[in-house]
Length: 502
Image 1 (cartoon, rainbow, N blue to C red):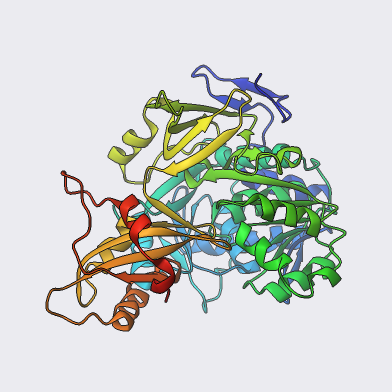
Image 2 (cartoon, rainbow, N blue to C red):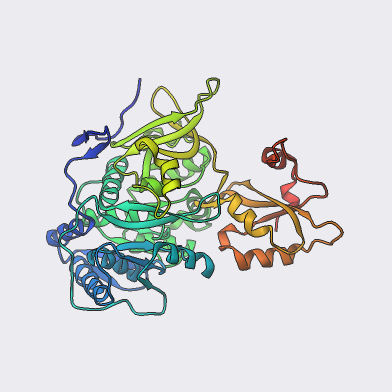
């Protein structure tokens, strides 16, 4: 019997068979306007140890950014790159871009300059909002003629080729995910007391799509941490009367493991959700004990699905900790190329939350989105009750505490490091982070391999979360199959990672 744990009212299929919510706002801008009109004096955005904005102040400041962007030449459909950290200014830049009629392009702040430049150039951004420069400022402007199908943002996600691809996110994608988040977590439609602590990056779809936007749609307050510090994180929960905490399992592990955690007043936390990385049953139980008033749950999604596709609700969190739960109300799941013995196949996803494709990548779009279904590249099985289990990553991705690291991308960079003859990158199991990055190096024959010089090169050419935490130097050649492909399962099994830690 298939279980249906989420509210599915107000859902209809269109002529193509895609499920959609029938009563969404016309745009993200219209959504924000509704919250402003509901209670303009309510607190909307708080920067920890920084500015605090009401809904009226948020709207007025964003409109001035929009006006400044218009004066800078940004028109309908023009891209605005946001290379800012977790601050009120990021929110103003995001809404300002949309209110100008433009398309927001969040840039990973941990990218190197070369990585960020690729995203900016590929998107064709007309304006780049950068640290140290004031936000655009002009006569207030808010584009009124926006529609659900209009492009609203491009979130870049790294691919196995090493070149990031831009997931084209529409206003409907954003709004559908916001409604998905509300229904799967069990949030009320409007509640100004639901203060949401955003400690994950806003340039990620989790921080922006599944935390910031649902919070503002509910007329609640988004409390943003500019930088993560576990001590300050725990202080902010009672100080700001936080009701919602969402993060990767590693952060929850770090929080509940603090010596002073037992003295922190977390009684106001009503929802504690996690995702983005594997989680152990013991950690689920520790989260439940640590946040006894909270409903816990595990979410799964991709940039290509605007964030949430499945969710494991509180009542199943202990018994099915290895599952990512059930399809969200407007989501259809299927499997391709199923192994008859294991029931495992490539996970396919369809729904109004799935983006329209990749920016400037027609071939990649056709490959991933053909037939109206997203081919995720994740290997999964779905049982008779509807529980979904992600069992492997067909794209050879490492999930480091919620940060996606693609092996081929890193290998392409490290192959040019001093003294490297061959290199293979694999995930190394880690209790806190889920996985860490491991590199197996075959040195150039006749040379003495300098691990510190290798790591210095990696730090210069890679974002910090892609730099290997483990480096194993191998005397013989990498194991390969007859076709020349490296046998990574053999490397994982044979490599002594404890001795390789750096």
